[in-house]
Length: 140
Image 1 (cartoon, one colour):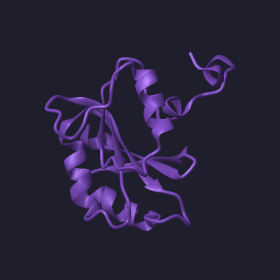
Image 2: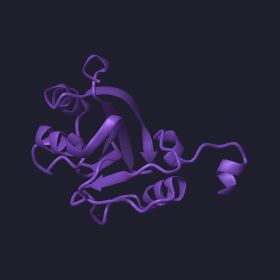
Image 3: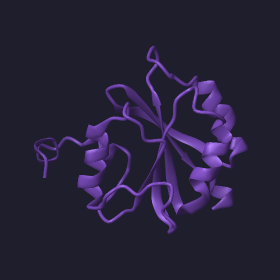
C-alpha cells in the first residue's frame, strides 16, 4: 500500500472510483500520458491495463484524448462498446493552457450524442483533467 493511501489520502486511481479486481481498458495511449496515473490504476486494480484490442467486458475505460485526435463522439461510442453495465468512461484531456486542451463545451456536446452523461470532473494528474461519463440512469 502506498504511503499516501496508508496515511488516509486517496490516490489518483481511488479518485477515479476504481476498485481492486476491476478490468480497465486504456484507449489513446501516447508518450504524453501520465505514467504515474497509469501505474496507480494497475496497483489498485491488481491488473494490467488492457488495450482497445481486448475482446471482453471492462469495468472502466481510460480514454486519453487531445483536441486534434479526431471525432470525440466516435471515440466515445467506441469506448462504450465493451463497457459493463454500470461502468464508466474517464475522458482524460490535457489541462487548460496545455497543448491539446479540449474545450469543456466540446465534451458537453459530444457526451449526450454518444449516449453518455457527464457526472464528475477532476484533476486526474498534474497535466490531465478527467471527466467521468456514464450511461444515463434511464438507459441502464
